[in-house]
Length: 414
Image 1 (cartoon, helix red, strand yellow):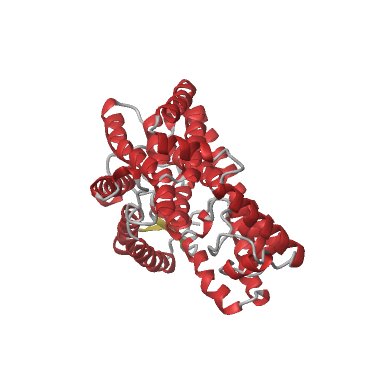
Image 2 (spheres, rainbow, N blue to C red):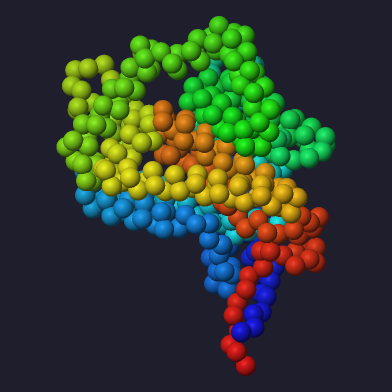
């Protein structure tokens, strides 16, 4: 059977442009980034309708099972209407496949890296200046353009991505560019004083360097220890409090996690549904001094509380499958050696580092429910699992070469 190559110049280029806008704006604007995602979804649908064969990353069955349970569980929610509204979080997941479909050449990988570095570093510089100029100076927690917990999570993911490329890319110029973006991002990460993001960055950075430059990993670990010991008292105390079970914030988390246990006891199959758990949490601890946010400061605890045991198992299976696939892709790219496109290797390592940071930090925060953080993670994992067989090139299909992103539509046999 012969196959004809169909070049979707308009929708396909538009899709890539929308994804660039998504990566650029995610660090500082949820409105712009989600508008870019909506545009990318429309253009992606147009490409599929015209015959573009979508890439498969290997996580499809895990994602389908998880999403199916989350949607089915709406019927058993304590408030089905609210759970239906929160189901929009699943609309962020297609970013994973959009990036895997559209960003499959070195030229596009380079532009995507430039967009991420520019957006992350730009927001970091803005946040640092705004924090320093404020009434409390850098003694206060920096919000950047979001709340400090969201800002910390985003700076963690961007910082880990830049660190991975610093470890993988050859050449002094590439190192200088990555380092120039990484420095303000790390400074902003510190200023957010977000402990879960700090721990996630440490874990993700160690994984990235152990896999790519083991000697750097030892230096990285030493720098973390020295930096923590030499930090100003406010920051050192904040870091050490992460390991103090008696700290008020940590005691509150333990109470919240106990709420997840109690919900599982009462509603083991369905949980409460995807709800704001403020009143549920307070109801399990009448008269106690409990924090009254609408979540339980932990991804696993929230999976269990809102979706029951099946939701906990399926959500973790989906996330662990992502990590396993990224590890397998990294091993394959390492084995390919010089034949593997350098930027493809970089995005796989960046995604693996970001996944590690998300999993570690998510033990202590509801980062899965934070739209900005989740959208960036799904984008990074899509980039990390995109087809990596395109040869390193200096131009994309738009410059006249054969694009790996071209779609293939079967013709009828003569």
